[in-house]
Image 1 (cartoon, one colour):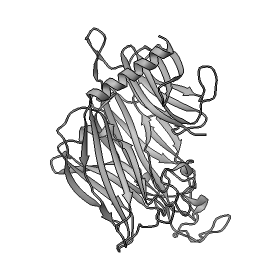
Image 2 (spheres, rainbow, N blue to C red):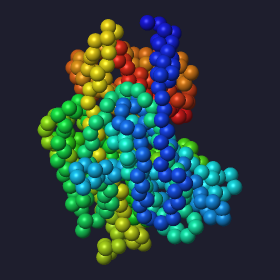
Image 3 (cartoon, one colour):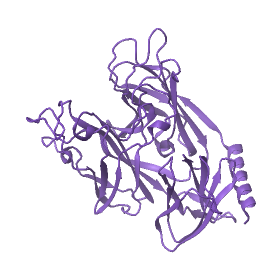
Image 4 (cartoon, helix red, strand yellow):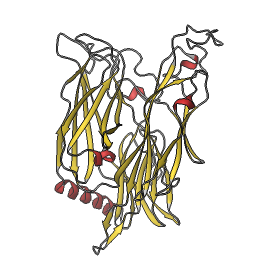
Length: 436
């Protein structure tokens, strides 16, 4: 197939999907006022359960009406879903984590900020009456604070993968970091997780942000440390760090908003760390899972009698991480091949990391059996930039790294790019941003 035909096929596919899809908007919190660190809880009507090709959430954070003002400090915030897992027993699943802007109400500041989030993986929980809980760790106690508006947008259709169950790893843990009197392993304990029989894929989502500074290594807010997820004998590790705060859309702000931080930036959402567990778990089996943090001791903690390190310190307080973790399970969707016969889905898109990226990013996807795949990268106008053919002789997690160059070797300009992975009539797709 020529490049022009590939591009045309993608555009036709997207146009057909838009023409037949219906987007249902669900308003929830509307200019909800936060001026103290307490949880706001309310129940909202959602549509009856069905499949959606995409579920997104729009959050608007703004200042209270005049003469009040915003809370000028960057604070932890989150949105969680309260779900009844058995009669009278509830779990809170974190959907969104964010940090409020440092100060946005000066002359030239944006005055309010908007975040868009993809919550497609949680659609099986978003139906009928849904109880949501929202929180901002603000301590104003007066007319100042934040007004929060949260709307959901649910597009009918078939998702690229069907999430159908979830297991909680850690529920809202505030983990003290670097204190021998409270070792991390006593808080982040081993969690046995039973894999549903229907599960074809599994993905861990770890929400974690570092808090506190003027500690040893400026932990945990400004300290670049790793976290490790262990599943049986398998491990995945990454550094909890955001090096891109200066690219924040909620800008400009006052203060230190553009500085790199541990897992978050003021005025921005804090994306979860995701780990594909599909090759590590077995349907019907129980696996031990645990989150580990890089070994560290905070010599500046208040309960250290000496309270010094090599550079001296003022015992400002304890370093900590706010952690919430979950595992989402997916099952095979039934698709149709050209002659209308049903066929189990082969592809599962994990995503690309880093995103945004410069100069390269790695696309990960899972194949359920041996397959030939095509990976295409398009620019925002639909022009084909890069195309590769790959052969996979066995099922499993696969990776492909795009170096930010075209098929002819030219360096691609900054911008938004669409990528797709295809096998036969099946296609999964994602979006990535190249920053220079």
